[in-house]
Image (tube, rainbow, N blue to C red; front, side):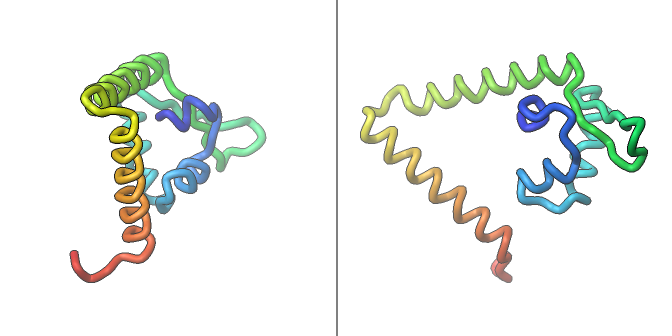
Length: 111
């Protein structure tokens, strides 16, 4: 939803690329957001095959709430840490995120 908010009238392909996912998996995600009236798909007059995505007013409100919750969670996690420890935490989380993306790109048979 944040991507759609920052890139109004984006296409499903754009979101799939941003999230490093296949378009088919994004389709189901978007269907759920449309069904909950958080995202709207509009078809431009010049291209019936394309659907442009934007947030509904309810989607904009939900995004504000989600961002507030994440900000509060971030503050809760970083408050007891000094700046060095907070930097170390960010570095570790970045390593975990990188590892997850690498696993998704090259799945192993461990799972």
